[in-house]
Length: 385
Ligand code: EPS
Picture 1 (cartoon, rainbow, N blue to C red):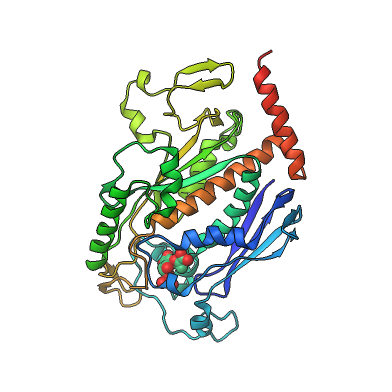
Picture 2 (cartoon, rainbow, N blue to C red):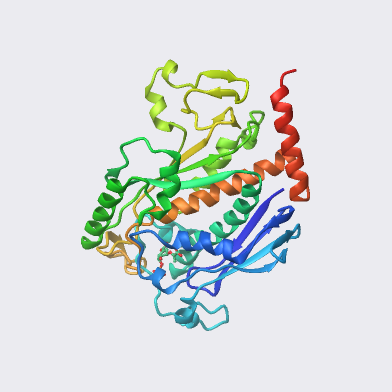
């Protein structure tokens, strides 16, 4: 029902996004999208490229006077760096072949992508494998988030670990909300400082750092997603959306890997009832999802990002033509992009949830969906009578 496609190479003209299936009546402006894109570009640990780009999404279609029309929303995010790459990346025949990549980076798509797509220049792989593409995902996710905000849903991402530094204490919702003011989008000031120190040390050593981000969502009704079939389970959809973010190697829902080590009695969330709150849980180990369905608690997902594979001090690789040991290619790069990935994670989660709302409530106009959501909430208060 709700779908999007993106196109664009990292050093090409820009990124194109088409979102189809969004209802009419959703407030959407270029400045709202810019707020998301700017957050994705930020975060301590980014490299020189982010000094060149100042991402903006032009709205080309699907919106009139700041409100969606129900027709496909088309967006374009120009690459400012295109100016420096026009001769190399031109779609016209006769592209200049300087800057060919023949030394695949361990951990990047260079080698398997080159083999699969029969490329002689690995640039033809890295250009699309690059995390530049996440600017397009964030633009699409921001459109979804604009819709969710109208339904009273709040999506918040924050960084919980960078390299060996972790947030060790419980955080309040307010602290997590303010994480975006930290240079590493981390809610704990002590951990933030230690994370920046770790990034400085990695940079000095020509190395890179990974980490873990968390995305929380408040305001979801119980009943999004479904237990009835594998590809309708919301946990599975969220995992796919998060796992497909560049460099993500693990995804957790709720307490994730930790619950595997606990006895069953300490792994579930006991059920309580209050006349005003309705059914609720004393804990949220399930991360707001049971049987692939939202249960009304805060949704909680985490993703682990490996360190970026482009290293200032390169790892061993093999030149694909000479078959000799060489240092891997060094493209200009970030030292740590976990804060940016947290924003991409928010976008990915918002996208999946917008789809889940539309699946459950349908509707062509925002007001129609709001009415149905309200009626559903009223029904839940009576259930099972
Ligand atoms: C990336 C390498 C760097 C990053 C880029 C992802 O780009 P460049 O090779 O142009 O210096 O800055 O990320 C972005 C451009 C972005 O917008 O996030 C890579 O190889 O994946």
